[in-house]
Length: 435
Ligand SMILES: Cc1ncc(COP(=O)(O)O)c(C=O)c1O
Image (cartoon, rainbow, N blue to C red):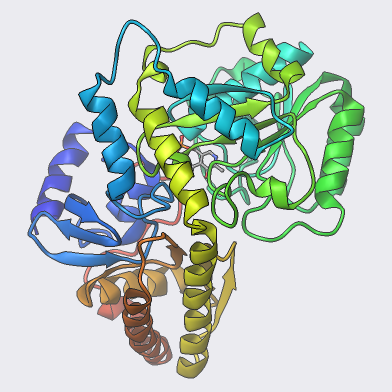
């Protein structure tokens, strides 16, 4: 398989093999995953051998909310390229996009840009620290690779366990940052209350995704906002993945809790690098009290892509379709699993659905699911990130294949043959060094 051969070369040249942990073939189907693509359009992907798949997995790791190579977004990008995507002067789309983001989020008055989610989160944290002149950050969930965040793991144990990605190694993060990133778990406001009671006077920000795997308990987000406000810390909502899925804008708009800062990336620009930090004027003005500046944050492609994506998102009521497609898949998983006598638990926002296999051998069974679905022409794992490009015909074909595979998995588990049926190793479940 050409992709796997290339990946074996990559592992020797590129430490860790890829630039994003979630794109490592070992995370999905070691030694068998196609690894590289030649072409992608809509929900379809062609690998280096010309084999076609329907992507029923992460769809650009959540970046391509409209589908791969969306024609309207690509036309806007071609326009930006033809007009010169980089210049000594600034691109006017920056101002247009800032106005649009503030129109969609009436509490926000100012906007800065970056190009990736993690770096935009680092910008937000810097702004919060500059604004409050304090160092500590209470947080919940995953927020990228930067020092402020990985500092949580400088203490013995794995503070990031239970925050989407366990086992993130903080080697290279200055030990002086130990004790500056203080984790609490979603829906456990008692943990944040303890942090505030202990370290509230040093707290610069409370950083979290407003919603992700589970809905907020009644009053949870309100209490978080109140605790942050009382401590004099900024509330920062990370909308990198949850935003633009069930509504046009941040998901916090549906929950009635207003942050001081919110961060967007991924879905706002349908696969072109772009990120935005929006905030109240009072919070955002602190960006002028510290140095935050980068050449490629000024390119024209990012804002042009974001404007085209957001306009289409709003005009076509994209979230409605994302919820519908995601719900169809989740219901399909449930029905197929029940019929096969295969125990799963479904969770996540409708367009970011996920199933957990209830077995001690869950990771091997999940690997086998990916292997068998790949043979049937689907990129698949135990999650589905819906896009506007997915058709019901594609979803139904996928669900028919998944029903067959669930039945196979149930039989393999009953016969103790799960490992025997795997044609390669079991997938990795988190961050590991590749040998
Ligand atoms: C909630 C959240 N924050 C931040 C990030 C980091 O974004 P990026 O990978 O663009 O740096 C991610 C990526 O998955 C995310 O889901």
